[in-house]
Length: 290
Image 1: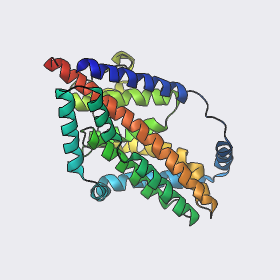
Image 2: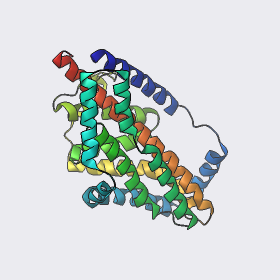
Image 3: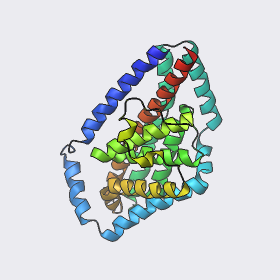
Image 4: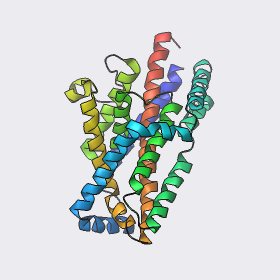
């Protein structure tokens, strides 16, 4: 089993390296990108702050009261039970087919959710509503990560897991050195959450090269700061689209941006959750001699 999982982890790390390389390159020049860049220059500072505040308030509200409502849209216990069955099958009969079944479970429903994100963005855009879309879009992002987490056997109720979830979103939207740092912190925190002891890091930089803050306890204050940091990244990502979405008809562009941003975040989150799962299973398999 260890050999199979290590091969899968190696391929995943190679995919990560390609992603890191792409984050260091300037974005492709397209008509839409050029248009959005010009729009961003004209966005009023007050609106920019409004978008940031809307994302921040959305995260706080959902973490405090909204998760229960989001959970009414899927079967939490069923997702966890399905994961346990697939994990049992993989551990007792290691094969590419069983691993692919587990991966499919982790990505189930993502395409539909991305389509819904685009649809609600376009619908509100056609009505000329930009900012009201933000709580709905934030809910869809969190719902997608909640489902992916459960599909890999992870809950999201505790303060450290909420912090981890915010790191996934921030990492997905970061570039260059910031992306590298977020990626490393996500791996280390994932190992800490799995092991509940000193982090075990595979395919990342040596611990001595990492910021001391990675080893800090996850406190309410640290969670609060990460909510702000993640909200700022989301606001920057969506700035031009939300400005355009606040106008009639051309606001449908907001749906395109919703779709792209959702896919970017969920794709990165799934990659990191799969890596967290693989590292956990490799360590357990070695301990048990599997």
